[in-house]
Amino acid sequence: MDDPDELAPAVRSILSAARERGGSRPSERVSVSPRDIDVALERAEADGRVPLIAEVKPTSPTTEGAREDDPVALAEGMVAGGAAALSVLTEPDHFGGSVGTLERVRDAVDVPVLRKDFVVDEAQLDAVESDLVLLIARFVGDDLADLLAAARDRGFRVLVEVHDREELARALDAGAKTVGVNNRDLAELVVDLGTFESVARHVPDEVTLIAESGIESPADVRRMRAAGADALLVGSAIMDGDVEANTRELVRAEADGDADGEDHRDTTEHPT
Ligand SMILES: O=C(O)c1ccccc1NCC(=O)[C@H](O)[C@H](O)COP(=O)(O)O
Figure 1: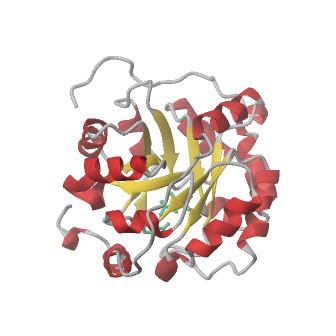
Figure 2 (figure 1 turned 30 degrees about the horizontal axis):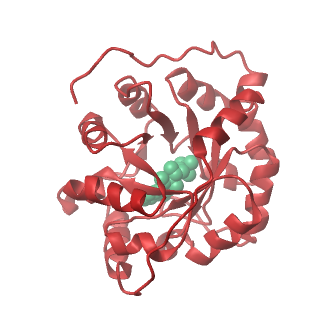
């Protein structure tokens, strides 16, 4: 992992809390029969919906206040609004999430559910079942391939998050098949949609590519799709107000707008 001093204080705090929670609770090894994310994304495309992963994110270090509504009602609103899949924060100390929330949400909906947390060791994988788990390349460093294998052994599909080309190369070397490019720089917590545009062009076509963070409007959706996003992960913009209406507005961004429908990913080979 990078020098922790380079990370925003909030992110250092998130990571040290994750390590403390780590293997503190001995759990049985989970075994998951996952709902297929690719099928869910393809179904959305076939229906003319932008494939959207809507995030149940009660609060965060960059959000003022917290959303206290029942997360299950929020999740159901997102699905009613057309979300192809959901992401649920399980980090309790900085995002107001919990594994119990994820279990309740996953029981209530039939779309794939991503567990959004800061997994840094294998024992954390056994905290709860989900269809996908997140591994953040920057935080797991040289353990990425081992954690990827450990997650797959349990049946999880793995979303590997990267922020630059070096992390992308490590993700691809480790065998990632689903890659998220986070527009939020975890060192400074600054969001720049140009991050996705610059990294996406180096992602091979066969990889499922997700644009994460900072997507706020139908124009942002079209921008990320034009840069090659197979799907978008959106939290704050959906959580702010009526989640069903907010989800619907983003899901319809291509039907209502004039996207060129082209994928601008580079299909030539790049050394990893
Ligand atoms: O969202 C934050 O404030 C944050 C701060 C520190 C580390 C991670 C953080 N977010 C995690 C995420 O990946 C986002 O929740 C997700 O991509 C959705 O982003 P957004 O649509 O911008 O809420």
